[in-house]
Amino acid sequence: MTRIAYILKEFIRNLYRHIGMTFSSLLSLILLFLLFDLFWIAAATSDKLYNDLISEMRMEVFVSEDVPDDSISILQSSITQTEGVVGVSYISKDKAREILRQMLGTDLLVGYDETNPLPRSFILRFTPEYLNTEDLAALEQQFSQMPQITNVVYSKNWLTKTEQTRTIIQRFGMALGLFILLTALISTVNSLRLMTRARTVG
Image (tube, rainbow, N blue to C red):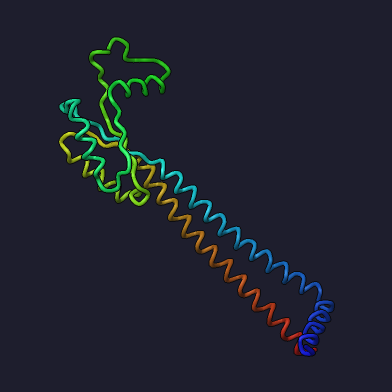
């Protein structure tokens, strides 16, 4: 207990003698560790935002006009069983017409009730593990090879740019985080060294 009391006494005495240096070192450490915490919070937030954006990714698969309506359910079942696909929604000609009307605010197909030129399609949703350029490109090629499918559309360019931006941010953030951590460690070591020297001199 005597030794602990002596150390505390010397610490308070040196703190009083070098209050400016001690206060600046303590403040620097607090700011560095606070900045490090803010960095990890920002990294976690940006990662969650990225996952939320990617989760909205959809792929639209257009059905050939040669496929009869009574074969749509069979085709839908085949697509649903594809690995990585978690949901398939069918868009009929009438539903596609309604979507177009809602988008434009007017019905451009008035008088084409019997000969609706809009294509039928499926809207596909995927598991999070497949929401990347490589897996979606493989699925696009797989669906394109099916004779019942005429076209496959999804936001390929947007996904590529988003992944590139995420990679750049992650690399920059990792370098910044390591720099902040290294600075905090060096500052801590120097502060402890100064305190030790002051205590030794005392």
